Amino acid sequence: MKQSYVLLALLMIIFGCNSDSDDVDTKVNATLTFSHYWDQTSITNSEFNTLNFTNYHGELMSIERLRYLISDITFTKTDGQTILLEGYNLVDVTNQTNLSFTPSQKIAKGTYSNVSFIFGLVNEKNTDGAYNDLNSASWNVPGSLGGGYHYMQLDGKFINSSNESQGYNYHTIRAVDNIDSNPSFPQNTFIRVDLGGITVASDTEIKVLMHIDQWFKNPYSWDLNVYNQMLMPNSSAQILMYENGQSVFSLGGIN
Image 1 (cartoon, rainbow, N blue to C red):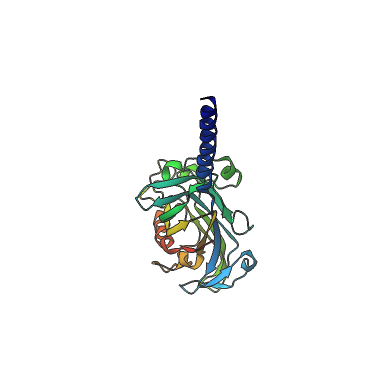
Image 2 (tube, helix red, strand yellow):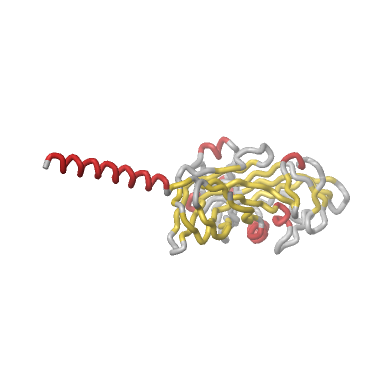
C-alpha cells in the first residue's frame, strides 16, 4: 500500500510539472517592429534634413523630426475573443529609438483573425500628466487644447508657393474646439490600425510599415501652403489628418 501511495505521488508530480511546462510553452512574445517608407522607398533618419521628398500636392519637402505613439496592441481570436496587451511605445525615428516594442505580457500560440493597435491613445487613457516618461519627452498637449498627449510630431520644411523655404509642424492630437475656456472634442481622432490575421507558433516579430507619404495624400491632397503650422488648435485640420491616417500603416510581414 505504501508503495502505491509513493507511485501515485510521483505520477502527480510528473504530470503536474508537464502541465505547468505546457502552459509556459504555449505563451510567447510578440514584438512589433516599425519601418518607414515614402512611396515604395524605405527611409531612415539618414534621409532627414534634406528637401528630398515631394508630396502628392507637389510641394518639395523635408523631414526633420518624426515620432509617434502606439498603444493597446490587441490580438483577436477566431472566435471573436480579444487579448489586450496594455502599454504604449513612443517611436522616435529621428533618434532611431523604440523602433521595436515587446509588451511584457505574452500571448498564446494559435491563429488570430486580426492584430491591431491604437495610433495615439484612446480618450479614456489620454489623461493629462498621467505618464511620467511621456512628460519627460515633452509629449504633452497644453491644457488649453484639452490636455493629454500628442499622437504624432512630424516636422520639417517645404518650398512654398512663393518659392521660399518654410517650416511645417504636422502634429496630431485630439481634435479640439472651444479652446482655452472649455475645450470640447468634435470627434475621436485616435486611429485603430488593423493589420489582419496571423498565426503565432513561437516568439513572433510583426513588421509594421508606416507609409509617411500617405499623411499628405489620401483622401485629402495636403496643401502645405494652407495647412502648415498651428494645426493643433485647428479641429478641421485634425480631422483631415485623421482621415488621411487611415491608410498610413500596413503589415509588412511576420517572422
